[in-house]
Length: 113
Image 1 (cartoon, one colour):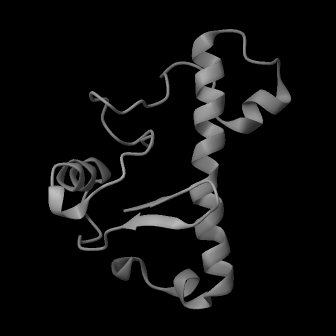
Image 2: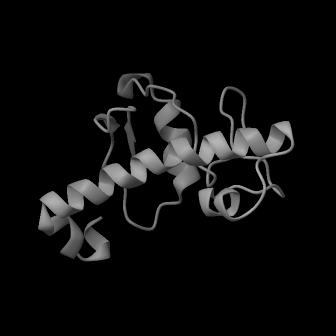
């Protein structure tokens, strides 16, 4: 599990889990362990809804290409989903850049990641 800031710098990482562990299990254990000092960013769509964490609205447009192809957001829920999706792309771009710089990250077998 990793979190980065808007400058694409990692501010938190925990790599102490087996590859089959579900995202929500890792997330919940991490936020409840005060020793890890988790920074409390926005959560990903795969994590559960819970107090203090805002996930995207289900049943509304979410992905950036959906907004580029069609009309602009028309409801507060779509506006939120558009902003959430834009912020989420930062972590994906950060990992993409790391994989480009350090080729071993791209070629590692899944059971190591």
